[in-house]
Amino acid sequence: MPQPPLPIVIFGARLQPDGAPGRTLWLRLSAAHAFGAARAPVLYMPTGGLSRPSGLREGDVMATMLEAAGVPPDAVLVEGTAPDTLASVIACTRLLRQRGYKGAVAVASSAYHLPRCLVLMRMMGWQVMRVPPPSVSAARRWHKRWFWRVREVAALPWDVLLLGCHLLRAGRDGD
Image 1 (cartoon, rainbow, N blue to C red):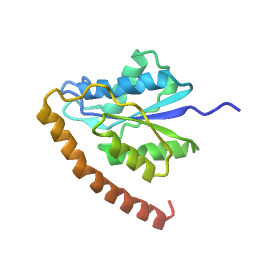
Image 2 (cartoon, one colour):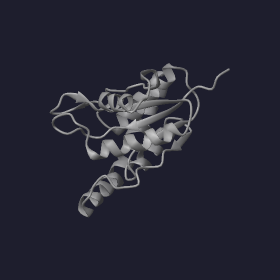
Image 3 (spheres, rainbow, N blue to C red):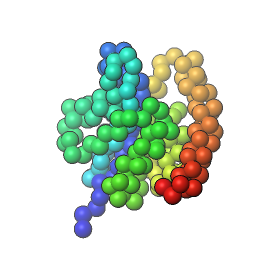
Image 4 (cartoon, helix red, strand yellow):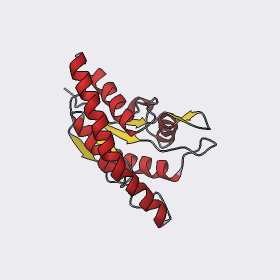
């Protein structure tokens, strides 16, 4: 029996106002693509919902970029509804479970964001693999880099609390 493809969840990042991918998105996607190219088979799962003001979805933009890089459309499963990291974790988990998938999941994001993504995916019951993050920082200025790091310090416990509440509710409701 053939091995199921390894899902690689690629967390989105805000698009430019015209809908073009920003530096952060390019770097995350490049890291995920390099990781996936070294393995077979893989299922790329770009995630991210509507980006204003462009009206485009981050997940769809990443899928287009993957296909332009030679990834066949059947190796891409877009999650295009989630507005944030926590919603992406929940939505990707739902998609994978609907497909009956039970194996490990690879997680791709920026270095500052990756710890939160890994913790949340583990909380959802996944064995996770860390996709090596981009070797360069998404932010070029030191104060921007520190802004994003400090933001993650606050976001991690908040999302853990929210996901814990979600899991308690889901368990109580029988989901």
